Image 1 (tube, rainbow, N blue to C red):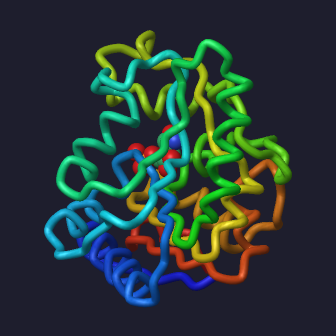
Image 2 (tube, rainbow, N blue to C red):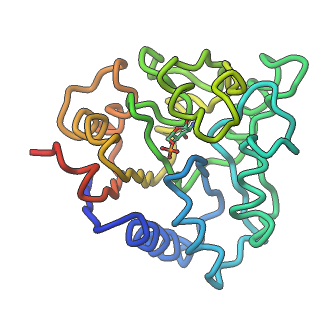
Amino acid sequence: MKVITVKNAQEGGKIAFTLLKEKMTQGIQTLGLATGSTPETFYQEVRQSDLDFSEMTSINLDEYVGLDQTSDQSYAYFMKEHLFDTKPFKMSYLPNGKATDLEAAAKDYDRIIAENPIDFQILGIGRNGHIGFNEPGTSFDETTHIVDLAPSTIEANSRFFDSIDDVPKQAMSMGIASIMASKTIVLLAFGSEKADAIKGMVEGSVTEDLPASVLQNHDDVIVIVDEAAASKLA
Ligand code: GLP
């Protein structure tokens, strides 16, 4: 795990963008994408760039259950706004949180991931160490599945909603096994509220209690943190 400490989110987004650009010169095909406030500066850099994704595929980590794609809180909407409207891909996939048969939709998503191996995965991290929506306690062998969101995650994400009662209680998430199958992983974290999760991920033991710690077992992970998120590292 390589840790790069930056001054702020703007600089972090620039570095993640540079890593992506370099990989694209090597002909990568599929990007794994994340939502949340953390990757916003990365998407800003990508939108302003001359990168062309029209022959590439994107696969997102997760989506809330029950939100329509047109809902401005859905991750599908977030991706349109922050990336796809400006930089369309040949094909972009997100989990279908409105499927009538969620289990079948999760299986379908695993098939999509298997057919499009992820070359470059962008990740954020939850305050409790979740990646995607893989909450503490999730098996490292898990593939796409329906998640009951942890109360702390509902609380953290309520800032995007009118009220905490509006936050969906479930999500569909790519599993940890699928994330670990990505060839390169770039994880971004900014702010002091991520410091404990970053310390556990980088220096703690590998445990399902802190899902991101599994990344210690991956041989190509770059962690980009600002000073506040890095503040508890030894
Ligand atoms: C959300 C998302 C994650 C994201 C994390 C942190 O719940 N499912 O993919 O990395 O929580 O969000 P933020 O970047 O807004 O802090």
